[in-house]
Amino acid sequence: MSEKLDKLICRITDNSIKVVSFDIFDTLLVRPTVVPTDLFKIIGKRAGFSPITFKEMRKTAEQEARKQKPFNVDDIQLEDIYKQFSNLFSISAAY
Image: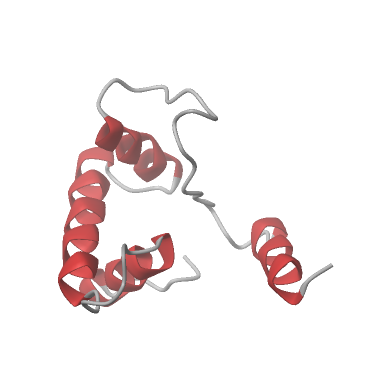
């Protein structure tokens, strides 16, 4: 296996990690919400946050990641969003 895949497997199987998030196109999976950002409420609840609070935190982190994006980069990645999430809300990325 590749080093990148090995790292991913270690993260996914780490018992200290409460939530694993993937960026997957809707054509592959069915989202259990009508409004895409409502999924953040489900993730927040599973991670032990207030669902509404987590949704707003996640949206804010994405907005900040987009502001920080270099001009020559097409789009941000989940890693960029959760780096900002960690910075903005002083929550360890390993939460």
